[in-house]
Length: 616
Image (cartoon, rainbow, N blue to C red; front, side, top):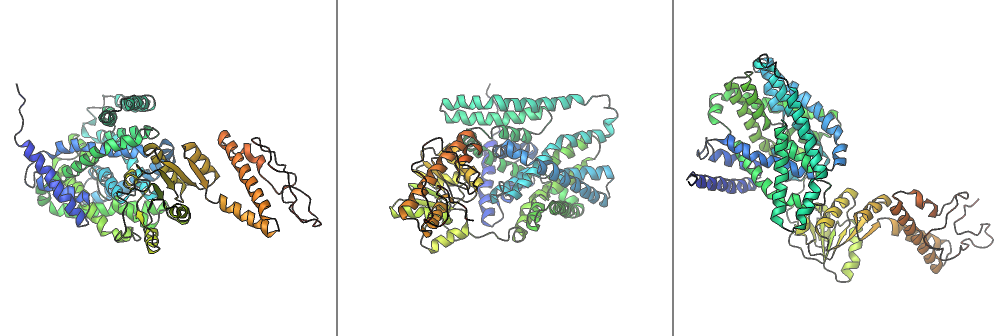
């Protein structure tokens, strides 16, 4: 027997996609952002628009997978060591913000005439921010990896951890709790612990061998299917343990963050993430019950701005107490002022437990949805205050379709000098930089420099990294250089990789990462400076050059010892010193190429030595 199908399903699907395709570019063109476009599209095709979809809750449940995949991708960027460094922000900043906002929002509820318990439930639902909206807005701005973005991500992670305790608290506050008191709670705690432990065990010992096996098959669609299996399997496992799907996906991402396959996993998941996250926003738009808003418009008109303003104020105060700047504190307050998708779950659980009635559930659900809808508008309205130094890209060439044989990333003082040798030989060099002012200045001097962030895989591809014979990383921040090296080594192994090192320690890290050539940014200039000093003392050019070469060779041998030993102790004896009792050990790799020569003029009172003797 053939399965029955809904004849309108295809029409509704086409209408859903059509609304998104029309609304999102239009809203972005108007400067309102893609999130608001998705929300508006959902409202238009939903039960309170053209009524093409009668059950937005079902779509919302499915579309939550977009949030799940987003958290997986964020987890891929969070190495365990980096996550450990964020522990104070997650638990310290997170607990302070949640505590302050809960008190403030409970006070707003009581001011609206609600009982303390009901006001607490309303505030607890609103205090948990919409992960989907905030992460999307941060991603569009490119701020997720920035310090202020990392603090916001830390708070969102702490909020996810609070979901289970809040549900347990709702169960405890329920009038039905007395009748259910005989039911033990420990099985749920055990289930959550076992699920978490099982996920960590699988991530540590099974996932990498699995992906190594699949990679050997060289079948791209199988790798994509395996990536989806990991994300959805982790989400399912955590949900079975009573935790959130998003938390499961995030942990899976963190466990794979050290994997050599993480960039491929990110590329495989990204299309599904974008599509499902857009569907999630549309489902939120469909969930806005306009009949409830019309019936209780006075309450909602007061509650929405009051709760958003109170939450924003509490977030701002906590941010300033924890030493954030005014701009960053205001930015965090505006981004996180809305309620989140978890409020729907909390309010439904409270209604099922008899703590709140159906009318309260409907009203506060509408309040949360409206706050989510208003957030992009509030962000736009306050943009001039939270982004005072944002520069325009008008007239700035964007990296796209470049094909140079050498890709140079970073065009500061180091890159400008390094480029001259290549350009003098007529080498085709593509140059990118993420500093708009630098790009503009270079254009004034006749250079063609493209705007692009070298830490993004899509920008590297658009800049021609896949066909470049060499990639020169000339950026000044070591963290940025390390990220670029990781991407290039993983995705563009055909190119020779030359990297500017910040210092000796950074040079060791780069050698360990497998770069083809690294150079400490001040080393050669310091050698030439020392040679010039010798010449000023009367040393001949030939002898000065010999001394410089000896120093260069000894430094190379010292560096090789340090790389091999993983520390600085082995190479300390090779350094020339100006302390008489500090003897210099001969290099273990090669004999000195020449005997020590007297650098002082005869009769000056100095002792013949291969070192410069201190003058009395």
